[in-house]
Length: 459
Image (cartoon, rainbow, N blue to C red; front, side, top):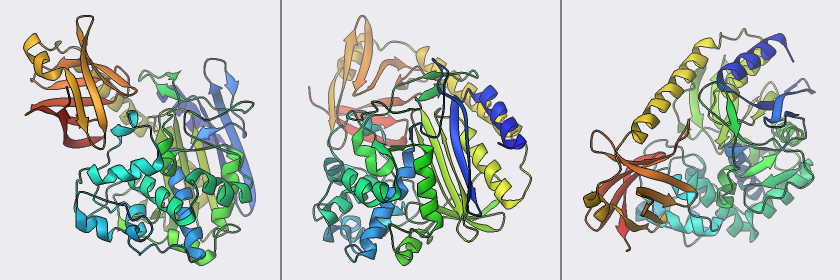
């Protein structure tokens, strides 16, 4: 570990509470591996290159790689309508449904709103989640602009299931993990870590510390963010990427994954230009070099994979604390080292992170300082409410209080000073549901989606 990396990690840990992590740098065919901090803050067990992490949205590149493999075998075309492979695909916009292609799914230009919150409650299957797309509201026009969307990668995962007639998990294991020698598990209640070294998930407390939390466990998120592996496995993956997809994918099909399709916003580092989204990958020019990269974040974990294709060098980073800026800062430090450049002082960004956490804490405090709904409000707030994509949630009176229950999200309902109604977790980085009365139901806005969704009263 270089002195620059060591000092940066120490500073990140002291400010954010980052528990630990593992990273690797590949350059000129050589591999440098580094592990730091704790796999479990409660036991002080150290992280090793065998420790399993959730790689979250870096799973998208694996699903896209299945598409490239299928394209190389002549079984799939990125520019053919999805309904050719998955006839049941639907959207609220019929034109978009009829013309949606794999390229649209994998480059975040579908127009579909994010709809993340539903996975707090809907634990069914990849196929069922793909079916629910027909009931999900759009936030933009089809191919109008970029909007990051996990759900469409779930649909792409199901398209691959239709193409091959096999479950997504089996395809990932047989077509990618096994040939590369990667140890792999998947997010879900059936995940078996018996006998394995695991990095336990942690969340920051907003005060410079962190605490151990539960794993995210919804298996339907597999194609967009459900892969679990270790540093050794991710090194094998990075080597495959630096070798133009060999030995699992034809070079031409792999190169198609890296071709920009949709312009995106830039990264907050001052050194990236021409930011775009390709197929499961972001692309940019970093300090004048073509960069291909992606980040991942889920409860308890963050990851980064980034590489310079022409220089055939790259990095992989995994940390076991969510909602910190640590993984992103470390990414830029390692990229600067590969470019032979001096990194900027990370102190301003850490101070900005701390300020954002204080702002969130104030918002949570305001939510919990709100009033319990009055008996009159309870008459229309309490009950069961349904949306065809999200299923149902319930608002109930309990022990003199009012609670909203939606799968693993449960929070007290409060009336704010401005009259707004909210159910908010008491956490440093909380999820929430805002509520508004409508005829025979409730309008709901979730913490991941700035859009009011209609839920009809069931009882």
